Image 1: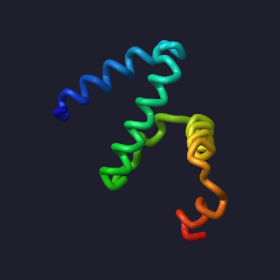
Image 2: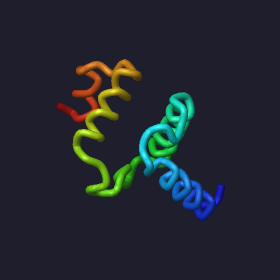
Image 3: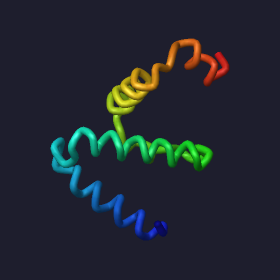
Image 4: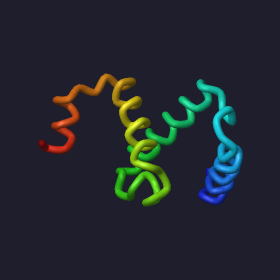
Length: 84
């Protein structure tokens, strides 16, 4: 997929989802989030995954906590990621 195709797809999804929940089924949401996280990780995570100020701290924390539960991340593993 070219970057212009990706940009068009992202814009279309963003418009579809702006009206609130219900734009995607739960399985589709999981597949899309999984693909985006995997793509971000493969790219080397050099840039921020989100635009500054686009999401609230609550939105980020809720999503990250759910992802960590899904991946069975332990507090030890989390600490080792941040060299704590």
